[in-house]
Length: 349
Ligand code: TRP
Image (cartoon, rainbow, N blue to C red; front, top):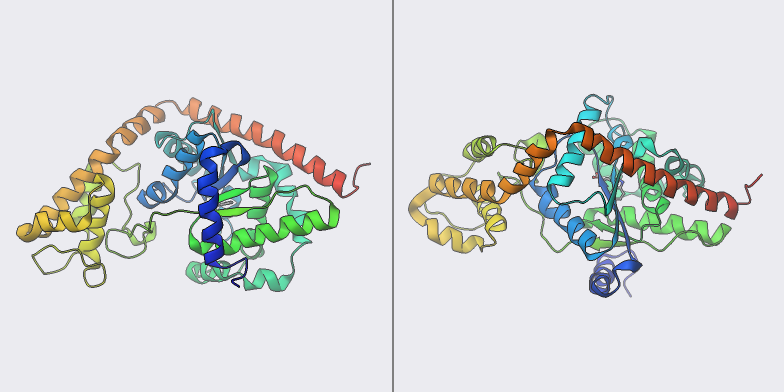
């Protein structure tokens, strides 16, 4: 029998929840978030923002954390943090996240959320922390020493999820170990002190990972990601510069032609068309014609979002108010949960 932490089991559970959500959205509370290290890009949009908006509009309780304390897991500076946080709120709203329905808040503004870290750390062993494959991979990629905060950030994410009693977390496959960690913490807490926290499941997204423009993993540091906040001209320039290959005839072949195929995938997702069909249409038109088509598709898709973004940017007071309101609500929720935790632990004096 596959164990509970396996991908197959997680996928089956996730599919059950996706079906049940449509009938009983009120049973679910979603928590997810982003590190405010820069602007959100295409990968975020198609990979998770669309899903958040869908859940929000279905009537699921939706919560989005801007994980500012996570920025310093592997960096020595908080430079541009406020600017990044405010722009993240703008990206969210432009993409359809509605602050009347979705609670948007920052780690550093919610002391009671962070305080859950103390009892939670007592529920995991050092070996469990050291074993997390995602933490190891992130530490290696960052080229930075393993800080105590990076080692323990999956526990901090458990605080993010559990302070609002989140029971679904939209994730990619590589994030499943974190969900496992959260589930374990919730169960151990409940076993020792009485039931306070729900069972947590990952909601696996069906959209395959969108490659960067050059076919590699999409990442700002590779310069292969189109940000939501880019202008049409910046988008055109980035696409023009992207690497293709020397074969004129355009074909969809992700294995052997990563650059050309990533461009086709990008156009496909924006137009709802099959990349193969786009390739056949362009054929001997070559990379130049392909890039023009991709640029037009991307800019047409994102124009309404970018227009809203430009409008929102004119009213930074409103953006700050949205965040202040989200933080106020998050504090109410976190204080209530911390009171329950204190009561369960007998720490009421
Ligand atoms: N680690 C996530 C990221 O890198 C952000 C995040 C913080 C998060 N806390 C979370 C995601 C809790 C899911 C659940 O973007």
